[in-house]
Image (cartoon, rainbow over all chains, first blue to last red):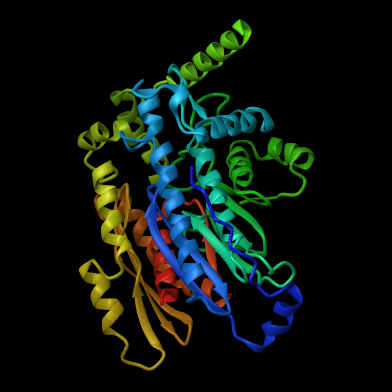
Length: 269
Length: 189
């Protein structure tokens, strides 16, 4: 369990920030590390991005993600989840994150009417617990929570195309927006749409020429159509879950989302 | 008290049951999947405990095993560690506002993809692909049309000042990652 020490509120109040802003240009700084099998990039906008507390927060973000990887990675034989599955760790001895994620997985399956599942089952196989689809969004949200404590910043934390945008203390109402380009799944590399996001999450699921990697939980077969589904919403776990489900059955999920996730928007390309 | 113990035991055993589902498919099944429908880096890593066998069997499934990807990690997370990126990111600071940044060489299922961008006065004016996988005919087919478009589109995308890229296109996942890392480097200071 990582403990976070809350910084003392030495920040200027919102009024002061608003007054100070036009005078100074906003700097932007990027931090990148390769964790969980993908490059994780953290971009920070602030009046002075060289502040040591920003460095420290970035370090904590990556440390959190590395810890998540140690606990949940399915492609590291020494991860806790793999050892659990191998019977080398008892369920009662495992990290409390395991239960938290398991509950999210069950909730995601229920909320999407079974269009998202963390139990992969190819036809004729025993279902295998694979929380990867939930862990990524959950991990990024955990890490982003640390950035929300940093005064006077706006940030975008991007993990392989899925991201959380947000801001630190004292920035409500004054935080700049981020332009998120949504890739055209039918023409590689083209940007099909952009989303302006001040606070929220953007997740895209899909496939193109190479064939699908998303299976339809109802049949266990890979989804055969091409294209992508992008969800912009308040939370990356759910944006990611809905995007994956929407790729499987766009029409059904559009209806479900109107009812169960009215605050999120769905773009199917 | 007994009730509590019972409840605890049943919760525990339920958990054990849930976790004890084997995550790895058997080797034959996964190599068939890998050959028939190549998956993205993410999802292939999802099934990775079997990729060792899958990669060794299929010649095209290059480098998605634990070892190689973690090697790529250490190499690529250090800016300018590979020969191409070090030469490019340092060398061309000739003009006042012009700089080039090589993105990380991103390890995809089909090989390494690496993108380099040229930034003039804070705007991307050019992007080029330094490395693309040419391991089989399918790749050549895809790359021959994808790469030129990708190069142009980076510039277009930047013209409308994109901060980040969200996408899941399997073809260009390596490209997008490498491009994102080049954009990252342009902002690393």
